[in-house]
Length: 492
Ligand SMILES: *[C@@H]1O[C@H](CO)[C@@H](O)[C@H](O)[C@H]1NC(C)=O
Image (cartoon, rainbow, N blue to C red; front, side, top):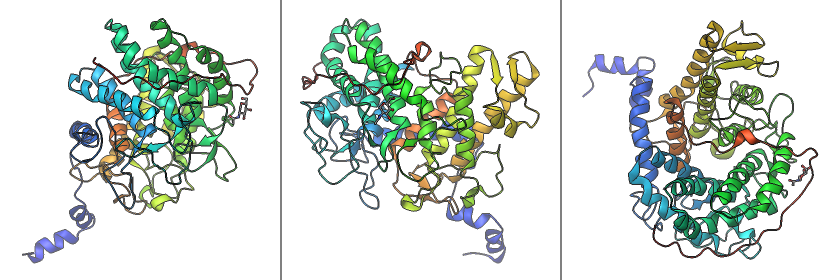
């Protein structure tokens, strides 16, 4: 029974909504610790055959969300699955040995899926590899959809190569050649053959050329080339096409930000697509290179500012949050899907890019501000000026602290709008931050794990960004691929 006093207390500003939407109330470090555990567990809950939230999914199949209606995400997307597995593989390499059987199940499942004919095509000319999603029992999804999506094969190759490199360094080349290389080869050949054709973007809405897709394709061919050599194999298409893909990637830059889609879609082009691409291209050994849009590059920082600022005035939850203060961010300002709200994974990506950048400055022992990145830094410190600052300078110390604090602010927003059990849906509403759209989105959890790891200084392996070679003249091109059904994955 409510006493009058308790009722008054409940009606005090802020308290009622806190009672209705119990939220995490520990400090940020405490939240990150518990949420990291929730996130990893929740990822595994969404992977068949044993995942508790996805009964009916085959072994190694990563389901996007347990939600079966409004929206129905009970499918496996090649993109979401590959991004999630890259997180699990990096965790495994960092010591989570219990994840290895899940990784192997994923690789077996993808080898099967590659040979499943689907509405994008089949394996004979590679076109079926870019089918965006499948049923959770490994059959084709035959409904209407935005297809093909050409980032899938690239992201899948990147995930498999990360595990393959580990096995090669453990002197298991034979296992890699029989269980991993046949699938990776198909995906690399696909990218080398089709990168210069349009497709649907990562949000499955825009037909055109997507910055994220081109970025993922470039990375896959660079590491694919090295991977093939480590096995005594070749990837001629990797070597001939990568410089052209990187050349094309430059054309998305408008001087201030990334135009995320080259398409006739009437949008500004500011889109989480670009921040996710910078994270995808992050190489802990790379300098702050503009050509590969490294997280600490002037281009990527300027883009970060333009992207985040585009949400400040359109979301009620951002009211009063001026430039330089972390804000809730979504896919793109014009978004209307399921309310066009902020997303957890994009808000986490905004944090992750900045943690990556801080790591890169520490590695190189300096931080530079150029005309391009000046506005980003001035939001955090109005006295920031163009120049090079060595790690023993006060300016370096205060700016890296300010960027870290700014990054933490994005994670704090996720903390503020996550329910007390740590469940992460796809979105939280622009009005009051209530969780919205698909529940327990696998990608939301994967994004949490990586942001938390980058904050803690746990980094993925290098992929060779430092050797970036841009073709002197951009030309449309293609390398004819050859495709064979991967043999059934055998013992490891
Ligand atoms: C193909 O590449 C050329 C050269 O970079 C570029 O101008 C063109 O827009 C590209 N087309 C697609 C669809 O990727």
